[in-house]
Length: 317
Length: 185
Image: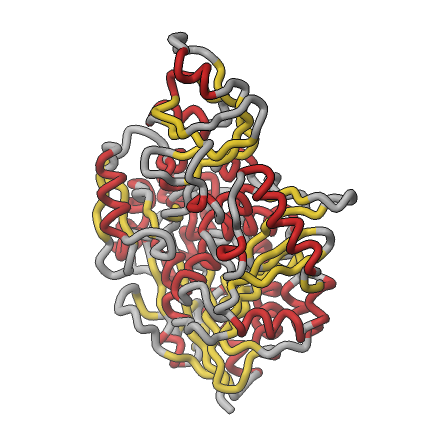
């Protein structure tokens, strides 16, 4: 008999979270996950190749006594091995030569594979890690419409776009659920949906106790509304990458499952990154669309990332 | 949103000619200039798609905060007030009247501190008192803009390490310190 109360007390979580984790992981993997959360994660950066080649930046940071290690499965991504001061205060950071960004959050822009002629919608864009990454992948050509509901956060997004030298982006301050009002069709959409941030527990231990099941369900409603809004403004043949920094199936596979049922023209596409674990097709007694195995889950114990979920959807004609 | 008028275009050129004695004509011709809510934005002329999109999509303006490069503001009196990036895109044209900071000076400047004599690696004359000057690091990267409080004669003769040389106006450290308050939109 598994003593959920004891485990939750030992690791400092609310018991309902451990109970749910046991429906995602088996007993051994649960402890691998919980122990990895305790160990934390290194700081990671993405080099802004719009401004500087990776090798030059690494050389400059090395000369400041900062040691870095390349993350081989993500282009231009490095983890900080050793630094005696905050890398955010380095001139290289202020000059926009790199963005301090979690590895997992580099996956959605790469999976969207934007080109120099795409019209991209980034639905919940602030503070701009993914938006500036999209811009970099597009070589600052094409068009990005970056939307954020919060005026203050949208201003931080603009500052980051300026710092990183992105000129191909327009920033809109609006609720992305109302994006249909603009009567614009997009070729590709990035929806890094607002979520409970359960996957961030590895960098913010307060989240072990700060979210309830009600919060998860509230976010699920918003996520579905956002995704429906995205589908309605997506070109036929267009692509949506949906991601969250939550490992809650209710905010991920269940959202996508409902969308797949409601919109038969929307299909799940496999990711190009060969990393992470498959999406869930069964959870808590519920069978989900079998294509959800093409989605990817990322965990601290398997990929040394925050808990993260990514799925790629295509709208067929 | 509208394209900048020829008069506004001239004003921008005149501002840089008068303030820094540089001719920005070739450089600014790489951009299309737009005015929106008294703010000036630059678009890369090579990115025709963005310009076409913006000019054809009138519904956007209700929610629009910013686009392209936020170059600066058009003050009610018609004068030009560039942003930090607005200044820095012309940094490569600056061949005189600038300060180059050493590592310690660079660090202090990026924290928003005044430039002291000990933080200056070298300078290019003429430096005139109470004028705007470009501030570079040793890699000749634009760190920001400051107002000089001394002239080059002083810089040549001074022996006092803590002597004040210039006060910061815009520095790249603002990106970290402002947290969303850098631009008044």
